[in-house]
Image (cartoon, rainbow, N blue to C red; front, top):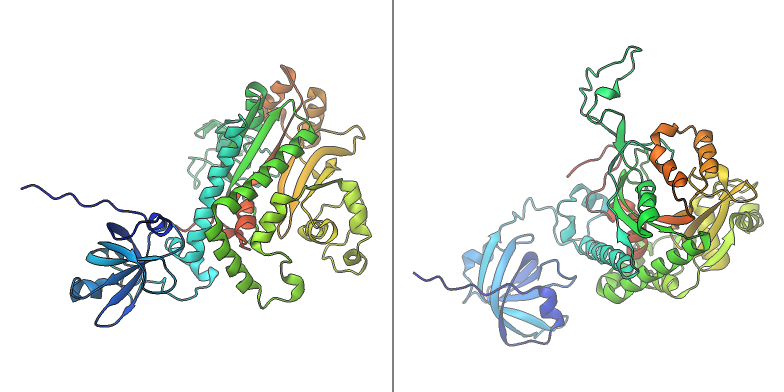
Length: 486
């Protein structure tokens, strides 16, 4: 017996943005709401392709009462019928269902994502279901668009994408907050003659960790391929339960041969402007929704806690403004003489050169003083990493941080120290064993060249682009101290 071919599924986004009406279509998705009476049911269906729902009109003369009873919030259905111009306000088209199949039921007594406003804290507890909410559907679509934009920017500029190791024997930042990778029996690890754990008997024959950065290996790529970038997962075992910290996150790290600090700043500024414009041009529906959501969240905050610009305005602010460039020393002078500092409004008072700037200082420079994105350069060597190029004053390094409204630092980078003797001295001063970074030092012995690069924390970017305030809400499954669920 010959089986009749089922009509193909059409995505809801295509139906809502297209011009077709009075055609037969099939849609599949998850029920947001169902309302109606004994004469007709109205089902709001969403398939994740866009923020908006498609209204399914179900006539009990066509759809049995048995089927309609099983259609509840959260259920997955397939509906086929005539796409027609909508009779009601709020949507251009609707689907008059001729057949509905329930693909998966959702018990209304236990399904946790009911059609009401849920707190972000509650939604984190059901991270396996939260992408079905409007907020997290929008965030995930924006996140995808930004992933694509990152690769497009570098591809179009001729960069080579390099996959750097996730398991590493070095600590790129020198911070020591790393997750150990081992196959040893933790209850009875092998010991050497001095009673210390014998990592020579471990899987890799040495102590290994999850990487905190792909930068050092990316530098190796730049010294052969010219322009490279990494985009991969990184890990920090920092026991920080804050709205700005994750134990697992994604980093974008370009490295460019024959580039100095000025070239580095130019590339980073161009990159960030491109990303802001790409979001504005390609994610407008989701950004408008997230803008309104943020305005609602801010409604009851005191005036000094509210953003001066809404989400769309902040993105335009980045896309359309040249970034202000100044040295760390100039920034310290501005901060020392600022009203918040003199009147004790900063939590961390700026008293002398050499202070490590906090988010409150960075935001003051961006939002109050310059009213535009800021690039700070030439930081004290003692507060920066070993690989940054030492300036002629031997007190500062050729580093740069980019500061954004509402978020503070979003990019950190530098011209890299290409001089072998200087780098060896810095490695020694930091207490890093030379045998851990011998391969890195080799690039300074064999055909060294000036080069520069920077790192952009992807989740920091998504915080800015979506207007969310907790970094746990811009990654599908957050990893934080005490939490590795899902």
